[in-house]
Amino acid sequence: MARIIVVTSGKGGVGKTTTSAAISMGLAKKGHKTVVIDFDVGLRNLDLIMGCERRVVYDFVNVINGEAALNQALIRDKHCEALSILPASQTRDKDALSLEGVGKILEDLSKDFDYIVCDSPAGIEKGAHLAMYFADDAFIVTNPEVSSVRDSDRMLGLLSSKSRRAELNQEPIKEYLLLSRYSPDRVKLGEMLSVQDVQEILSLHLLGVIPESKSVLNASNSGTPVILDEKSDAGQAYADIVARYLGEDKPHRFIDEKKGLFGKLFGSK
Amino acid sequence: MSLLDYFKISKAGSASIAKERLQILVAHERSSRNQPSYLPQLQRELLEVIKKYINVDQEAISFNFEQDDSQETLELNIVLPDLHAKN
Ligand SMILES: Nc1ncnc2c1ncn2[C@@H]1O[C@H](COP(=O)(O)OP(=O)(O)O)[C@@H](O)[C@H]1O
Ligand SMILES: [Mg+2]
Image (cartoon, rainbow over all chains, first blue to last red; front, side, top):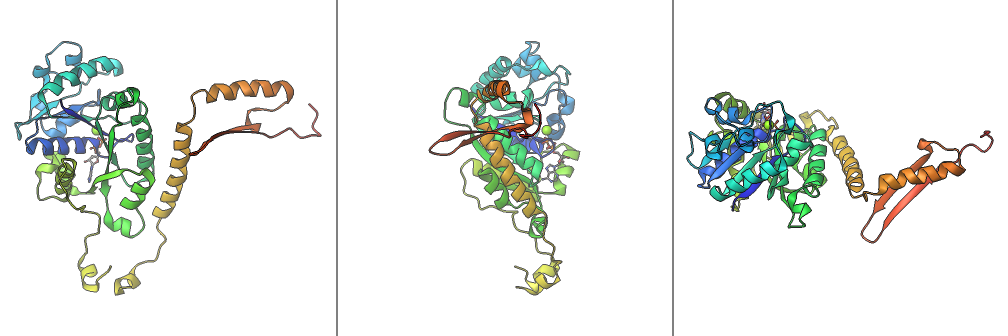
């Protein structure tokens, strides 16, 4: 039985796809058979971030409609044997995905994979609902900014009322906070909500902080998940997140500002 | 206090305002999330009944549902029309 992880946020552009690509690669690199699914029907971005856009033949919707078998649509990642990608369709039909169809595919994938990562579209409508409905764990990607925090809280409300686990009165979805695009320097200046602020407002377990980083754009330019850039801060942040999720004890990093020369000389603290 | 702190422009950051606004908003939205599903219908029906006796409009009536560990309360406030105004 696979564990189903939804990467969600409510708000768009906060780093869900970046996170889905990174953590699915991280889980696979640790030897877990992992599949990452793009639920953003109509847009389709995950394949681009994963660098497999030219290998897409069939997609999620083709499988649901019975036009292709699951193994025809799955793309094996070129960096890591254990990772597969199920791309989204570019159809304009918003109703292309159905709850039954998605449930059936997840059930089939559960037989072959250890982890299924669902990259949610933005919003709290149908697409986002389908992405989170079957989840066991939810990674709430939040930016330290008012509208993102508020949307994350709304998403928490949906996870606890409109998911399969909620409807069947099962143990609730495990929710984790991933605070992304964090700038410790701006927090220090009082310009940006701090990790503690966001945790206090959302009362969520913090899985990790991902700093605002140039390496994320570099990674997407070349189509390699940022976690493969092992020297980068964001890459390391995602590696820590995967390790923590798997139960390793890793102290949090990237929360305090890097001291510039000036700070070092005068010992700001 | 280190020397560096003297150089810092002392500017009250906007993050504390953000936090305060969010705390209020999130608390409000969480409590309305837990409202019973019959509340909107109850609200409409009560409004109809009240209108039979008092000439008030929508804005004069406010509903407030609150929940704590021991009890749930539904508070209904009606601002009555000006006594001297002719109905
Ligand atoms: N930690 C980060 N630092 C800098 N830029 C980031 C970071 N995370 C995401 N981004 C950028 O933010 C934009 C939106 O990210 P994306 O993962 O597509 O968000 P979503 O899937 O939530 O819409 C992209 O341009 C991405 O490169
Ligand atoms: Mg996305």
